[in-house]
Length: 396
Image (tube, rainbow, N blue to C red; front, side, top):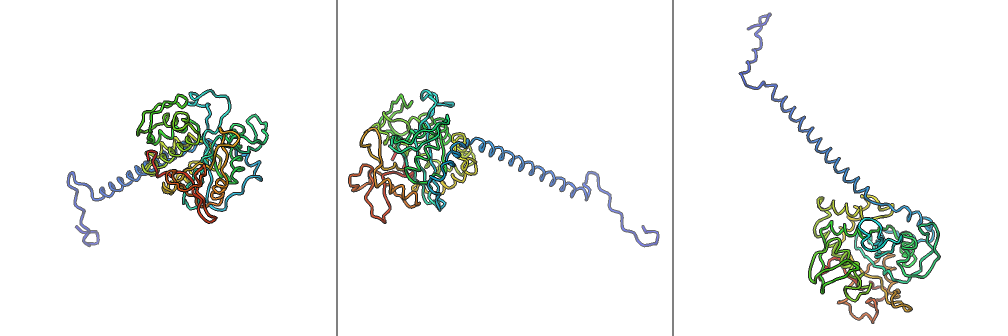
């Protein structure tokens, strides 16, 4: 075949056999498949992002912000200790014994007031070197400043037992009392009630404890056999609240038991990889965010995650628990007073972000008969106090 000029023409393409794909159809199919694959991937990514955002907003919205305390503290800013110069942080953890709210009424009648059933000053050292949790006895005799009550009236400054501060003026009054006692600036605070504590324990599937003797405590809603066992929400709350039925019935021993339990809780969270496993982490975060009331500087999921990440970086043997050096108050054996200079030494170390060492009571040697078990130290030595760390299990 030739064209009109006589030049041989290009041969005609061979006709496609019946059922054979066109040479141009295969690339079109590949492009079509790639477009659908890309679209599918985009849908999956967007869906995952949407679910992730929903989870984030849900957890973030769970948190209750205490703006009232922040406003009251701002009013007294000039009398508060100065902020630290390092990245160390001091967080006041308050366990409220309020009977208001779902699940709390079974522990007694709500009379419109609440006490700080447990108060712990948590010091996170700069550089994530250590965490030191100091229990403050509720019966410790302290100077409580004039505080604003819920009805707008003000209390007078008075010398009274520590947990009255929370009843008088809530969180702000408690923080100002602690700052007056320790000269340590409180950077953040968290308040958790009975129901929140139970949900936190359930979220990690319980915490293991060991009992030398069986317990039957009606006030704490606790009945347990002797031996090793895992406590869940209701039982765990009874365990940390029980006072008269376990040990010698003292509040000091109860604080020791609370410290042991919290140490075991921290140890379990770290050892079980909860913080690195999304399926385990979400229930913990959901329970934690629902359980707490916090200041505006710690009221977002990002803030709490940063705090959890800081705690995760601290080895469990550097997460320490102790009770402020105390003894029976000289004028009332049912109250406590600080042991000096041991208490001042502890507050100074925390205030200046310097090391504090804790040693189990069984390992203390030559404490000069001091009731709190602190050891005598020289001016340049690191103060040592009776306590424990999170690496020690409750059953040890």
